[in-house]
Image 1 (cartoon, rainbow, N blue to C red):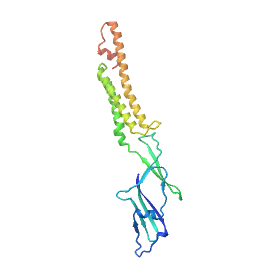
Image 2: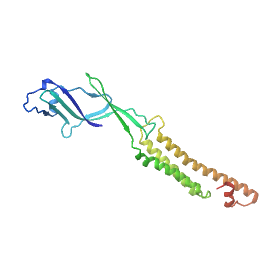
Image 3: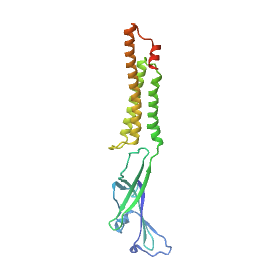
Image 4: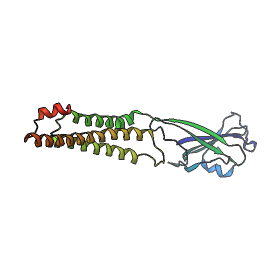
Amino acid sequence: MTFYLRHYWKDERLAFPSKTNKSMTFDHRLIEKIWVPDIFFVHSKRSFIHDTTVENIMLRVHPDGNVLFSVRITVSAMCFMDFSRFPLDTQNCSLELESCWYNRLFINFVLRRHIFFFVLQTYFPAMLMVMLSWVSFWIDRRAVPARVSLGITTVLTMSTILSGVSASMPQVSYVKAVDVYLWVSSLFVFLSVIEYAAVNYLTTVEERRRFKKTGKVLPCFHCRILFGM
């Protein structure tokens, strides 16, 4: 995150007489010659002061010795997150500032995720694949190429969605909410393929049994009566 860190303190050694009571503003070159607070970020992984086009530091001294010290900083800090409800999760993060001479300061942040992106990229495509796999129930069971290709296509598409979501997520050792949704959707798609395999096998067995008795293949009309298709 990027923000302005501003310090206020009073240093009587910097007081100066002024008839207009106006403050004086200095740049970063004066910082090394006066006392400034030794503030640091406790859980910082990486932080830096912006220096485009010059160092983003401002020092303002008032006639009575009051000092304003402002610096523009970007900090990358650690935050322990729980993704078990992802993407419906809410994360609580804190930024801790500490000094050798003063108590620690905590700044708490509540992070909420916008769900609409995941609805468009994950939930809605997975729902369409499940509905598409159910279309095979209305296709004639003798149309083997059509039903098999439809089933395999939906299974591969669900695998692609799963791989894309896993690649964009941190590697955690527990199950996330989006994992449950996608794996259940994949199970529905997979079961639709298994259903056709079972129907095709039972149809073949019944036709062979009828052929042994009558010497001819059972017409499709009678097959539908037997299996309720």
